[in-house]
Each structure stands twice: as C-alpha cells, then as structure tokens.
Length: 282
Image (cartoon, rainbow, N blue to C red; front, side, top):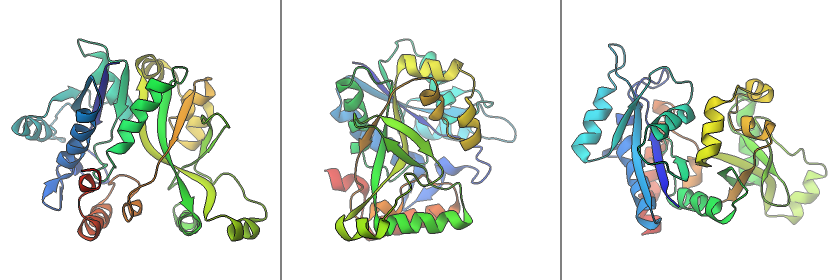
C-alpha cells in the first residue's frame, strides 16, 4: 500500500511567526520533523514524504521554507494561504499528486520530538484494520500527569484533549473536558498504577477516501463547539482507530507541538536532559 507522509509547515503562525525555521538545539524545527519522517519512511515499504507550506505573500515570506527545503533536498509543495487547517493543507497537497496514495500521514511541522515509532504504528494500524478510516495516537496518563492536566485546565481550559474508546479499540469520543469522569477515584488510585484517562496526541493517518471526505464535508455540530476537527469523522459515522503508545522516558513533558517561544524552550530542555529522540530508536 502506497503511503505519503505530509508535513504541513505554516510560516505565518500568528502566535509564533516563522516557527518551522526556529532553531531548536542547533537545527530548525522543520529539519527535526523531516528527520522523523525520513526515519519512518526508511522502515515502511512504499512510503514517501513531503513538506507542505503556504503560498508566500508580502506579509508571509514562506518562500523561506521553500528555499530551506530545497537546500536540504527535501521535497516541498506550495499550497493556498487561505486554508483553515493543517489537514486541509495535507489534502490540497495529496490531491495534486500525480499518483494517489492509499494512506496519508499528517505529521505536523511543529512536532520535533514526536517519536518516529508513532507514524509507523499508525500506518501499520490502517494496513491491519481495513474497516477503519483514520488512525491516531493516544497515551495513558499517570495519576501525576492527570493531576497536572486538571491543574492546567484551571487556567487554560481548552489545552489538552482526552479520548474514550470502545472495546474494539476505536474512538468513541474526543473532548477538551477530561473524560471519563471517575467515581471512587481514590480507591482506583490505590489499586491501579495508571489512570483510565487517555490523552490524545494530534498525529493522524488517513485513508485517501477519508481525507477526501474531510475536505468536502461541512463542519459538524460538535466539531464547532469543541473545535476538534476529528469529531467531523465520528459525527458522520467514520471509524477512528486508537493506537495507544508511550513516549520514551522524559519526552512525555512535550506531548504537543511547538506553539510559542516558551514551548521551544521547554523542548530544548528536554533534548538537553534526555538527548535526541531518534537516538531512542537507533
């Protein structure tokens, strides 16, 4: 099955302009994400990868990303600057390809500490589960991590997404609230080393037809309310396979992408403390 890893790398981030080219411990964020994609590509048959950035304008010099990619020999596509989401950018890239891939991975261009095993496991999940439309990563929270998430939501209620799953391993629902609610929590804490809460990690693999559906479908009701685009699939009866994974020790401190200079500093401290993420999989 042909697979394409697309790395949406938007230059014009409002919170962190030029983010893909920001330097993280001697390398740009984008170069680090590309190395993750290249690692996955080397271990998955019939797999290619490409960066997708937006069309440059006077206020958004994204041609710097194009120039950087070309200097590194990285394939790059230029897409519309008006796209609403990274998923839309992935679809525009894929729909223009001369050869249609069977599976498409959306590896965000601001995720420089994503374990390379994650995209590999998603590709394997869709190859093994032919009835699923999408696959995505989740990780089970320790009680300490659950406490930290709850504390963070007191000041940033829409940070961090949790997910509940069916007995067959597919997603039942995603929410910015912490789900499930837990009765008799103290008793459970005493008997279980990990909490029952699954945190969603925003990395996806799609079948081509599922990605095409997403690009053409209207936003769904709960998608608008929660601002979670994956709900568009669930509200329309599509199946999302959950793949539960663990971060290598220490890297769980940076489970989401780089959205601010503060996030960049946090990622740098993890690399200094734990070393390069790819070294964990050498």
